[in-house]
Amino acid sequence: MTILRRLRLGINIDHIATLRNARGGAHPCPIRAAQMAKDAGADSITAHLREDRRHIKDHDIERLRNEIDLPLNLEMAMTNEMHTIALRIKPHAVCIVPEKRAELTTEGGLDAVKLEHELRPFVQQLQENGSRVSLFVAPDHDQIHAAHRIGARAVELHTGHYCHMIGKARQEEYANLSDSAILAHALGMEVHAGHGLTYENVGLIAAIPEIIELNIGHFLMGEALFSGLDQSIRAMRAVMDRAKAA
Image (cartoon, rainbow, N blue to C red; front, side, top):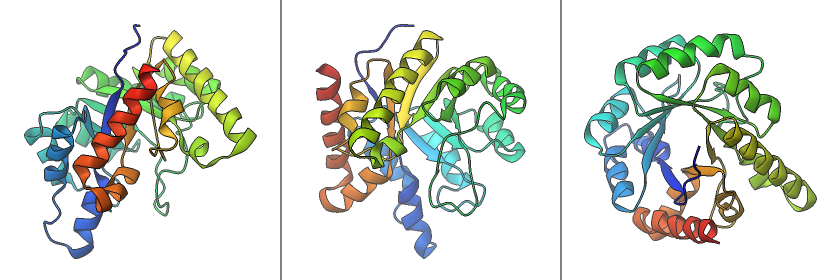
C-alpha cells in the first residue's frame, strides 16, 4: 500500500449539533457547518451517531449523506441498531468505536481482541455493502493484529492518551503510535488517527509517514468560537501540511 503525501483531514461536527440541541431548535445547523468545513479544505465529514442521540440525530446523518459532497465517516458503536442504519445509509466510511452511556467522550479504544468473533461478520457485511470500515483502537500491536484478522480496511489510532501525557510518558506513547502505524501499514490497512488533537500536538502525529488521515472535532469547534470555523480548519490544515512536508 502506497503512503499518501497529502494528509487527509476529517472534520467531526458533533458539537455543532450539541449546541443546537441545547435549545431544541434548528440553529446552529450541522449541515451548514459541514459545508463550511468542505469550503475550508476538509476531505471528509465525521459524525458519531450515539445510542442516546446526545448530539447528531438520524436526520442529520441522512442530510450529510445526501447534501454534502464529501465522504461521510459515520462513527458508531457495534450494535444491531447502528448496523441496520449504516447498511441503509451506506456512508463512505464507518468507524466502529466503543461507547458508554455515561461517558463525556470516547474514553479509549475498541477491544478488537476481545470482540474479534463478533466484529468479523459485523465488519464484513458493512464492507460488502460498500462502506470502508475502520476500528478505533489503542496503539497496541495485539489490537492491530486483531483488526487485520477481522478484515477491517483501516484502523484509527486513539491519540487521546498521547495528547494528555507529558515528558517521558508522552515520548513512550508516541513510540507506540509510530510502531502501531508501521505495523498496520505493513499489514495492508489504512492508518488514521484522532482524539484530543490540537494545533500544539498535531505536528508529530501528522509527521508519522504511515498515517494518512486525521479526524479532529472538539478542539476546532472550540477554536471556532474565537476565530471562526473557516479559520480554525484552515489553520489546522496548515499545521498538518507543514508537519507532513517536513
